[in-house]
Amino acid sequence: MSNRQTKTDVILIGAGIMSATLGSLLKELVPDWEITVLERRATAGEESSNEWNNAGTGHSSLCELNYTVGKSDGSIDISKAIKVNEEYQVSRQFWSYLVNSKRIRNPQDFIMPVPHMSFVQGEQDVTFLRKRYEALSNNPLFQGMEFSDDPNKLTEWIPLMMKDRTLNKPIAATRIESGTDVNFGALTRILFDHLKKKNVDIKFKHNVDDIKRASDGSWELKVRNVDSGTVERRTAKFVFIGGGGGSLHLLQKSGIPEGKGIGGFPVSGLFMVCKKPEIVAQHRAKVYGQASVGAPPMSVPHLDTRVIDKKESLFFGPFAGFSPKFLKFGSMFDLLTSVKPHNLVTMMAAGVKNVPLTSYLIKQVMLSKEKRIEALREFIPNANIEDWELMLAGQRVQIIKDTAAGKGTLQFGTEVISAADGSIAALLGASPGASTAVSVMLEIVKKCFPQHLQAWEPKIKEMIPSYGVPLLQNPALINDIHTSTARALGLSDTKEASLA
Image 1 (cartoon, rainbow, N blue to C red):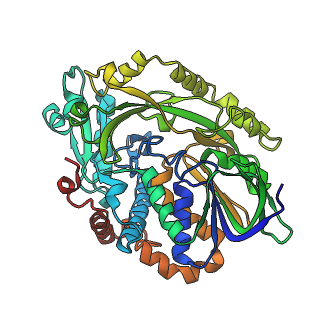
Image 2: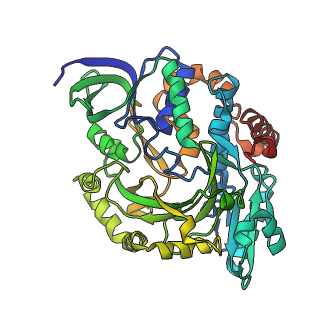
Image 3: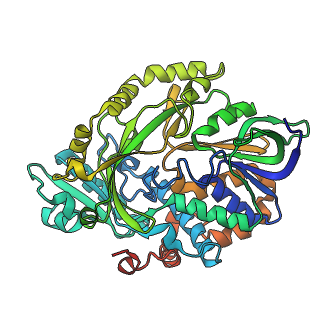
């Protein structure tokens, strides 16, 4: 073991979109802080941030039906949809700032305009979609949304999905042209390339084996070089644990009381992918349907146009599954080793509560390719099994904790856990994750650096004009943000920016 000790101001664990975003924010706010990034893989964005491991939707609630819930009085609760959309607007503003200040050269390398749609079948779901449309389309965040239950109009919007469809039940869709496809893998790599130029020390193939508090209040990390096996100590005043599914284990090793009683539930996923140009050319949209009964929220079926390496393909899925790994490149013992005395009761309660979910996930794993094609044919009636290949998506680890709803509650979403003194923070959870990265990292800035906030605020407002402003009370500002970010990110003219 090497006794070499390296001190730095900030250590970011994990080279995914979250660390890339926090590093980029901090470099703008305090350029002279020394930042080190530690990543156990060989390149940035190989896990959940990778473009083949996520839906790349640019989650903005334009099409995701699980962000709007029908209430018992028949009305629709759109509060979560508003929150996610507002957070995505924050991301767009920060990316636009990076483009306008020449930190990012070509936004088309990571973001493209692709219409967002919701598609439903059956009277009950059509009624729900119409009510959802009425609730959202009056809101300035969702301007431009259209609704139709006319098969002829739907054939214009989604020809591939309407071809050979048996119209024996009502169908309907909503459409909003200002949706996006975001390549979060490419964005992660672009941000790390920028950080490298800003003298951020990025160490690939370096695994954090342990993390503990030093006597002076800083954090000491035991870091192992994956290739050589040599170990060194690295200390920092502030540590961010942004290692996706790997974050829970490191949070537990830190020993902070805020991390006690929290467990993780891993969910794997598969996508079907079509790369045949003659099929891909017939569909240009991200179309979300309703999740089947018993399915977790991240298993809402959707048929997406994706733009990766300037090539378009279609993704359908995800099909959920179960693996005890917390990372795609993780260990089969990840789930087992995450069970500690302090979270044992919580984990057991979750196990009892989630028997139906576990059984659903195991059934999903066992699905034959024929069964998966049946699910795809709900979207593309004449889909041919030969045209689609199966691809393993990234692992997601949902948070398990005790809440007002009871012991061992499974939480869907992302959550920041930080020490009382703000010296360490970890990001746990999954979707809508990457799309809301800037908001989530600003929350960490607020929680962990309160003493600097007043001095940093002018710069934050320069980067994110809507910072601290309730958007819904400022429709003119919403309009400004939509227009200025669309221009900066090359989304203004759909036809011009399209690959067509």
